[in-house]
Length: 235
Image 1 (spheres, one colour):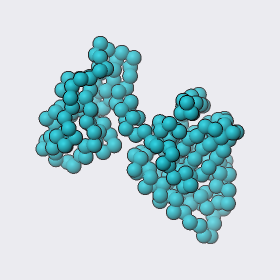
Image 2: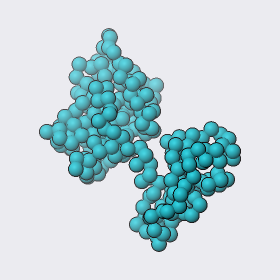
Image 3: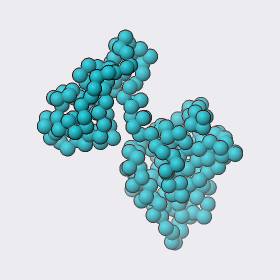
């Protein structure tokens, strides 16, 4: 993977006009011909190099589409990851639009802070996150069961979703490895809906956390990081 580093003296105000989406699409199609779908093109601090959002990812290319960089663009002064910042902005999610009825709802304390999590029941990082969440107070957590990791993920997700107390079934499994009692009949259509939702939101890892302000994180975050993000989202 190639990494491009910016000189710290470069100003962040980039006046160069980027090519249109259609022009960049045509240039990449002509030179690559592999069906990349361009949705956004932005200027960068590097003259003649543009940030191109393709298929939920960022690449860097020249106007003619003859050269391409794949990797992280870092501003050395302050070590700011410009690629990650752009991805965060592009993936910002409208929390109010999430179908919360398809998630397991957990209320802790007064429930004033809010977060949503896409999690697989066999995801070790999800289990670590769940352990940390036991120490987070005054939060409402919406867990979208997202069975993608193992052949057993969907059957286990179904048993958890179909339990009389979904919240308790999820916690018992993730923290104690206590399996839920299978139910004879249940509408588990929410699981397929969650998989489709994750695809639309470009959820590519578990756990993926979405905060009330639309910001996202992936992985088993620390208690301090979670509390800071929850407080920031509530401002």
